[in-house]
Amino acid sequence: MPDPNGNSLGYWHLHLPFSQEYIASIKTQNWIRRKVIQLLIDRVNVLIQLKTKDQSDFRIYSVIYLPNLFDSQLVLIPDNKFFEGFFDRNTVGQKWIPLDINRDIIEEWKLELPTGLMVKGYKEIIIDEDYSYQGEIWFIGELE
Image 1 (cartoon, rainbow, N blue to C red):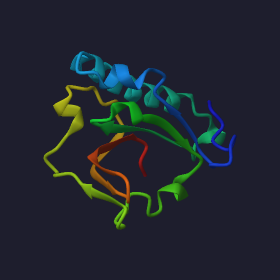
Image 2: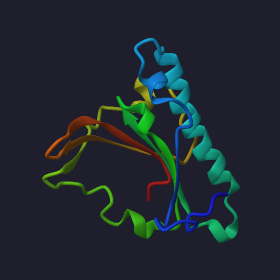
Image 3: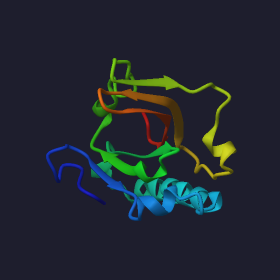
Image 4: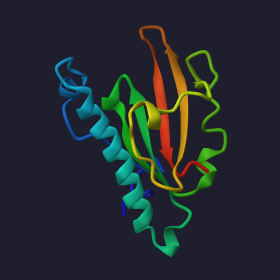
């Protein structure tokens, strides 16, 4: 089990271990992207199963960015306090708008969701002086 306190961030995270050019390429087929998303979900489930009694407060989840799948990651935080206000993003520079209740990444991508995992999806809008971005951000795992 990774140590969430092993760095100054106070949590552990792991980005996808492959080339951004590969996953973003128009030549990369969607079945490969689907497989990557499913592997992230499956790894969340494995890490949850590995938790010991002393790690029961750990929260493990995946963050899936679409269309920029390369930015996706696995995250392990030490406790629920991290989530206090975490999903409330409504500033000039960053907004997370809950996606329509009828949207479902699991159904849309034909994924398998292990029992007990939660899903939350947001439209993410980032606006900075030199940068703007709009996409989706999906959280899958222990979210409460």
